[in-house]
Length: 188
Image (cartoon, rainbow, N blue to C red):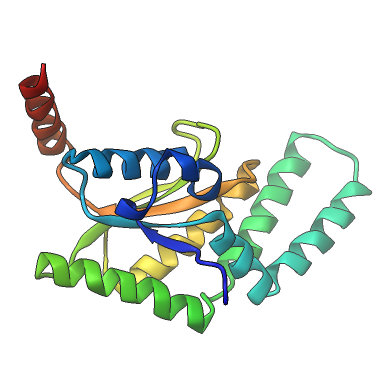
């Protein structure tokens, strides 16, 4: 049986930090507590590894890193390497099996809401790096969702290795925080 690499937020918690990253694990904890967390799902670190392996991007990345090892190092060379690695990842298409599973979760999310849902797609790591990585808001439709997941997969090209991807229903953050704060005040 293949290892699971995609989870609903309600399936995870703080014990899954190394599998899905702190942000996802904490969202799972909040969901279990009954806090007003938007519906969502996350991809584990294994999803990125599978993507890289199935598209053979891992081999091309390794070759680029070997070539880089022989070059003089400076900021310009690191920036060029980062751009090259991002291009390798972004040039790949999501493998069909992964596409089907990710889009089936998205379909279920849309069915639960009764409409085509706008989501946010962002990376989440086992160590916090606020503001350093991509966040895509208001992502609608399967094609755009898959494109943004691939773009999040290349976040590690900025130097972060252990990450996962979180996808949840995009909401007006001001309203969400207001609901969260109002509910919290009721508990005090």
